[in-house]
Image: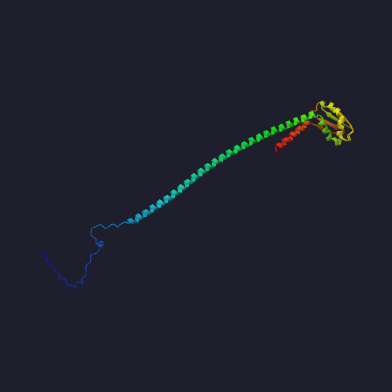
Length: 231
């Protein structure tokens, strides 16, 4: 059986009146049994988010590393500073100890020198005094008489006690000593005492006496020198 072919005559009149069938969009064509298309993921947005997170992580990592580096540097600096301070402190303490020891040694040396000098002064003074006594054995006695002149002027008698080695020579000088006593017109008696030291003497009158004690005199001189040394 042959298929019949129908030919329709084209008319310009009906051309504008006919409804043209427009095929639906491809997206609206549903093929029965076909799998629905999967919604596309926002790959670009996800990539941007990941890059921002990575940038932020790197920035935070740099900040954290910087802070840790600064903290480590400060800790190291503080530790080294503390060590240097301890070292300097130790050196200063050692210097202070050495200075203290040196000062003590110097003070001991000075004291020893002062003691030696004081003894030397006293020794020299004793030597000079001894030489003077030998040259003028009666000078000390005459000086003692002049010291008590004010109280013996009106006395009727005075007794001069001297060491045994000086008594004989002093008796011969009694008359020559009277002019030294000014207005004294009383009796002068010379007595001797073997217990007296050389250059010692004792002058007595009715109401009192005065004595010359060389040992006590030197002791007082040494005390004065010792007090002067400690000032």
